Length: 571
Image (cartoon, rainbow, N blue to C red; front, side, top):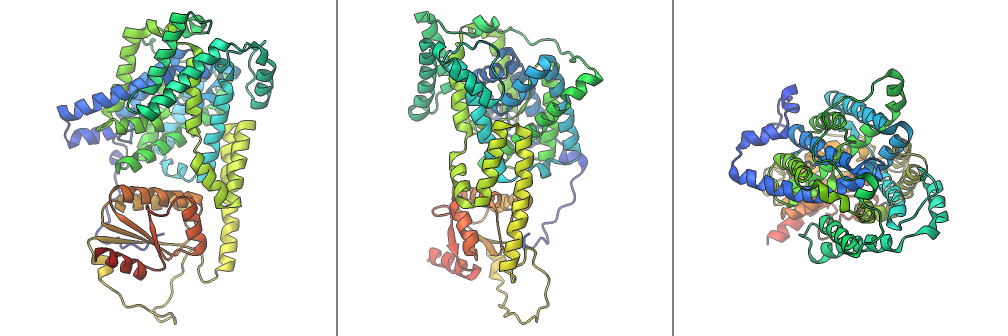
């Protein structure tokens, strides 16, 4: 895909041990003193404050006791930090799993959920050792945005009965449309006190995010709501009234009930858990890389996620994955390495040991308000708008994936979205080759005297220490995005000037455009001038739609024109 010379940069193929060495070991080898320990402890405490209410809220929404969410954060989070391939990854229960976990509990019970989580952990370990982590990144960008938005809608709908204090005559339906019908029929039972507590929680979170962004909004909001319920004696459901509180210690590890029939029954759920855990954790690791300039090892991360899910299952927890929002909080709090994730788990355990009795006063409408904010934040609104504008094909993949997730199930949405994205790519490439016969998807070799005007070689192109010129040849689509992204990411913040030559790119899709946008943002943060050279009108339009425009990037008709722009900038 690229024409950058590789001479002198070739490295020996890493050994098995090097590929699967946890980042914790790498950080300790670099040197780890009191300063780094203090930074990781502060970051871990910051993330734990965010994770406490979220872990309980996610567990309740998943149709299990709130304590199981804490077990997941403690055991799973610790193992992700200790064994992971990402330096800043935070593991724990995720809102994205609410739909899958609740459905599994409804069909197979808690014991079936724990067994499915255990099997999912084995799948993830196998995927890591088979080195499938790279291939998971091939999922098209519209599919990722679509299924995330679909999950957000289902999460929000699942919290309506607690947000409005509704009383349903029977069990709440799991499917979206029947659930909305049941909620509408129960509208006359709404509880004004529950609505007030939910509104208070949401208002405090939104207000603190705007005026006091450094404050722990979730924890302050839940604390304020709990205090209001206690002082005003409001008639709303609490953790104490619904679940009897939470225990003060971790349970003894134990295997779930095993049996061939039970294992066969939960196997599809285990596969769904493993697929979503892999996607979410590697997306989170990529976000962390973009924020810090570091690089994760995807297969090592999958093995760690597998071990974390097995550990969580043994202690009665639910599914574990990497968490984008909490990982970003960890980085912004000044974390130095994976120990911050381990400290986050230890602080959650400390809360259980010391303050568990206080959790019984937490009102369920407050936790529903927290999840309503989580659902809102999950929807990548700018990405949805860009995809709907960029092309009919991307819009179709996004809409179909979204619709299947909310009306069918998550796995079907991802599989169909991926297949549809692949078919659309093949169609686009067929049209591209037909229209641009001179620019095929893969550039063939040709003789030096093939009748094409040759430009004299300028050694300054390769020797200018302030400028890197990177050339992409051929179609740039979701299947190549991971490979190109890893290369661009390594060099985006090193020179003063970065020219991306797209003159031989006949086509790129939204996944590729999203990769280039991330590279442009990283270059901008590092003070690197980023220029896209030689892009065709179609390629340029796609990049601009996805945010690759000033001040992040400039455009030039050719590499020589880009170099001329850089020369003017020096003058």
